[in-house]
Image 1 (spheres, rainbow, N blue to C red):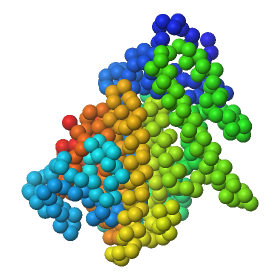
Image 2 (cartoon, rainbow, N blue to C red):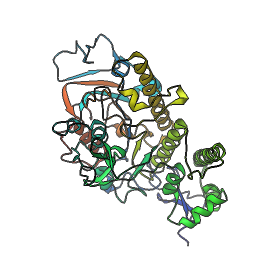
Image 3 (tube, helix red, strand yellow):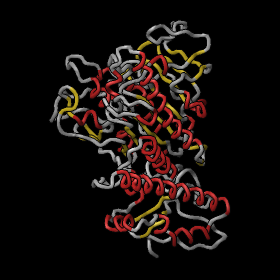
Image 4 (tube, one colour):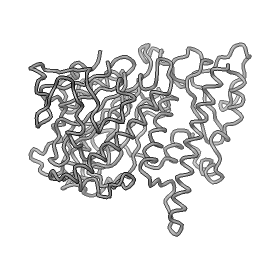
Length: 479
């Protein structure tokens, strides 16, 4: 029997291998968990109850980076019975090392997360000490981006870069062989790894948050079509080019396998497959539409294939690909840069025509501060879209959000002052029950961001002894 075909089996058995995939002509399509799969758990690709996973369902990790810090007063959650001083500290939190509250309200910036508030943790007073200037002088944006997932100090150079492995790659390396892709790196702006981008720091530090080792950043994919093909292609580039040329859906290509599969599963699985196929086709159509709009808007130019100009659609396409990647266990680890460190994107769709980085040096100008708060809110809107999509996608042990950890934040706290302390950090998802959610957690003393990384790695089942400037697990985060 061909390895590319769905195995025939009697209707009464209705059992499929956990790693069943639909394959044809250089493309392969992973499947979500089906009742028809032997030892049903949370993945069509790997058994989460196998001995190699310690008998636990898989946990997913996504890390999302935004540049230039935030407007802190608009970010801070409101806490019942608590007031904040000018530094954002909770004045009546007492002398306890860790203040925790479930009686809090979302701030104006975080309002778009209302639908998933009970599945969030807002963590305050985390610091990236290696992002601070020290003897290295200027270059806070480059240090903010490079330390965001490494907590390691970048060597100030434009050529011989040296940093450290990032938390996503620690997990991905330990999970090699368990999923089709060890990790998925995405972005909305391309990488520049040569030359200097910030006060003598290599552009590699500003362009990448994912680092495989001290000298090798992980290249991020910015074109949705190519990210889609990386996830679902099987290495036959010519077949993929042909598929693009005739605008054939991957669902058309694997139709024969899909029809065979539909005949072998029960009604519940048929509904689940129909929903999944519809979601995949919707992503394809949106990619095609964005490509058509690009070509139509610039008919006299040689438009790069797959360029997506509209920020909101670009971000949401990438988020949707991450959801499908987690749903099918194509990968359990992903990163997304909504812009490069020090990014100068304009957000005309929300009537902010000034460049983001330039605005971040607001010097307390009310107009600039208001525009920055508008950008912060808009970026959180995109996070809200992603989290709600995860929460509405079922997993054998709950929603995908329940089985995930989604880290969102910036390597700078206040972009105007270039601070690297009290970072704006959201951690969403319950990590398969390891993290108690719905809390505002503020530490009295600064805590290394690297301690959060160690805790996340512990939840992933890929523990590490140390990272960057870590001192141990983050107190009180995991159960």
